[in-house]
Length: 280
Image 1 (cartoon, rainbow, N blue to C red):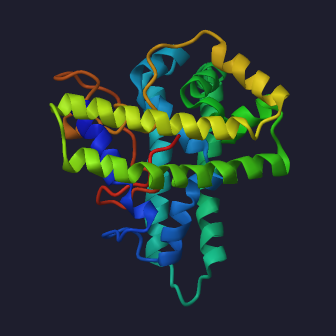
Image 2: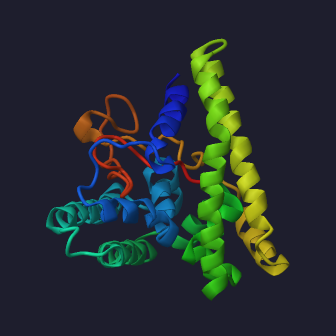
């Protein structure tokens, strides 16, 4: 049942990115726009999300204390973004200026977190797991892209294509998803399996289209990374047990036992639970 609820919430909370009204969120409309575009320009967050899954941390040799260090870096980003929102004046800051200020907060933090992981964990294995989880979509991440020879304008075009395909995917699955929710058949577990199949098929379509944008050499390099020591215990992209807030809210990896801190909100989380779409 928890799986079904998780899948349902992922889609319901995706509404803001698809043009539906959102409550709360940034006061500055340009900052709201920049946040919704953040993953297009800074896909590193997808890689960091894998760390929220305890078996992945164990596989790459990242301790709870080291994980807490990375999460503290990410929480620092959220604090700075909220401070930025409070300081902005729409009459004085243009859309471009706001986007630049946001990038100046986000990019260094992700870089520091990446360097810390390279020094304290098996970062190459983390990249391999990311490719196993995300497939060809993973090539939008710079760490993956440079390992397969995807650079410069070709990388930017790939990232743009992924961004548009994801939004097209959400538009495509919305009617069927709403039908499943409004006219449920069977148990919640059965409904959850139907929703999961729906998203799985949509993710596969996106992945196939993105694969067509890679050269044969790039695909072969990514395939080698994907096929190296397959790891069975990977969460589904954007839909796994990664959204918990940690022991401060009474949740850990096992009921009744403390665990490491949960993940901070996504930069696309407006503070009252609204989130942008799940990622492919």
